Length: 312
Image 1 (cartoon, rainbow, N blue to C red):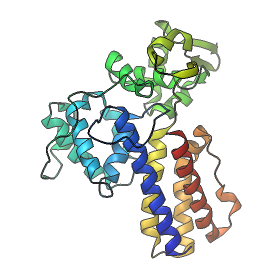
Image 2 (spheres, rainbow, N blue to C red; image 1 turned 180 degrees about the horizontal axis):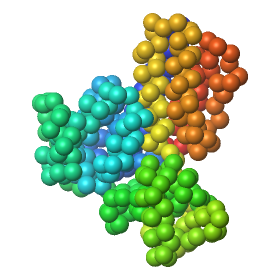
Image 3 (tube, one colour; image 1 turned 90 degrees about the horizontal axis):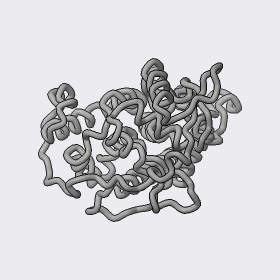
């Protein structure tokens, strides 16, 4: 695989990622920025934060946005889920999270203090954006549920169930979607079912679903045609894959085809279930012998980038 091909893929990942996060920040009311597209799926708060932090070196204006969020909406983020998703991103994102933690701590969200103390000092800019985030869009569903129920597994699993159109799922699938522990998710499902917010479909395996008609006025308001709920996409892991793919490209420049392919297979395996959960059709590594998988992985990255543009 030539350097020109790698450079082209990297540029595509960067463009797709920047367009996706700008569109989602605009939906949340970042009114000082031009909207770059519409958002049709449920926004993942922590995924949005982490990809934005990762892309700041490529799009400096994202720094203003993230700092605005630290001051205007940080209380709607899950610190635990941020830490869990962070493990899927390239390691350099850890340093960016430390900077965000300092901003959030200075704005009054003391949950981030431990990580802020480890961060390096930077010269801050004047914050740009409204005093409060905009949460009335259907795609902001998870933020609104967190505002009402509190930040935690109950709000997240309810948003997930509403976003999969009355499909019944077991605890394992919910854990994969919202990135909390199995015990926490199971307890949240049981409590929501007991309260009548969701329903249990079967005892073994125990599965749950959210009756959409019960929630439609809250989810849609007058803003959504055809009574369609915004879809749940596993954005946190998709964004992590895009970031890890860029890192793979950076490292691949001086590597042999064998090493490139080996590293690519490792990245693919880390995100195999993400492709399955989102129903993204990508080439299987098993169909590429030895060092030939570098090309197969490049096709996988291109397919995920295409899927992101289509479904964000």
